[in-house]
Amino acid sequence: MMTFTGVDNSFFNILLGLLLLSAIPTAVALLFIPSPYGRYSESGQTWGPQINPRLGWFIMESPASLVFLYFYVTGTRPWVLPSLLLLLMWQTHYAHRAFIYPFQMRVRPGNQMPLLVALLGALFCTVNGYLNSIFIVNYAPHLAQQSWLSDPRFIIGVGLFLTGYYINKRSDHILQSLRRDNPDGYRIPHGFLFKWVSMPNYFGEIITWLGFAIAAWSPAGLAFVIFTIANLVPRALSHHRWYQAHFADYPSQRKAIFPLIL
Ligand code: NDP
Image 1 (spheres, rainbow, N blue to C red):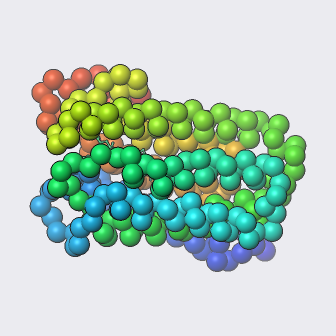
Image 2: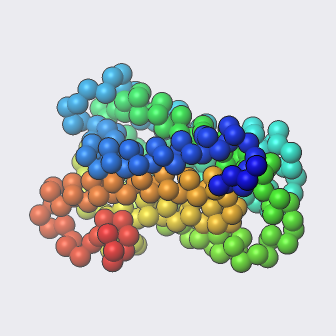
């Protein structure tokens, strides 16, 4: 039976459909209530038990790395070069995000994260890791062909992935340096793409996963980019308004997330 994903596996298709559908309420909810971690963690609302943000990031992000790896190595075609390169791209991002970033980050004194946020993030990362891994290793005959390495979709996708990765990591590094120099407060970030937008790290994250989706030519990758946009664009708009409300001298030409656009 032909499906909208081209994959003959009802469980995969239903899960992918649910992930896509959930992007809409996620975006709408986050436009009104920013996810209560980081600068919004002291908003006075009750979100249940609180945990250390380092532990929260580890709980949230580690399933993306581990679940992807498990389904990859137990899949039907793991040892072909295009798929292996996609595995490498995925793990380069997620092994860092899950096992290095939480232990490098500086935590504001007293700052905590709701356990609920960590668990919802972990649920998303589990589903997303499963869908992306299983599509690459089981349902993508194009990735079993060496010729995919010279396909324009692969080349453009890898280029976007690397560009997004660099933007994301360099921006996160600037913010971590600001946090280190100002342990309990916020400053206006300057330099690099902060000249153009308030949240270049989020912009880089979206470019990263857009590149991955194109390089894998994957419906699961596309669902991931759509969900990432639904998650990060509302948060970038909240951060942008927060900066404008807290700093009278906030640069007026700076956009929230997409240079010159939004
Ligand atoms: P933020 O930019 O809100 O915070 C990143 C770090 O920088 C935090 O430690 C924060 O401290 C600190 N910081 C931020 N702004 C300032 C400032 N003006 N002055 C001093 N310190 C500052 O990012 P997130 O925590 O939301 O995200 C972190 C990473 O995770 C990003 O790379 C993002 O792209 C990625 N991410 C990806 C998602 C996805 O859907 N794929 C979802 C969410 C995040 P504090 O915590 O005290 O505010």
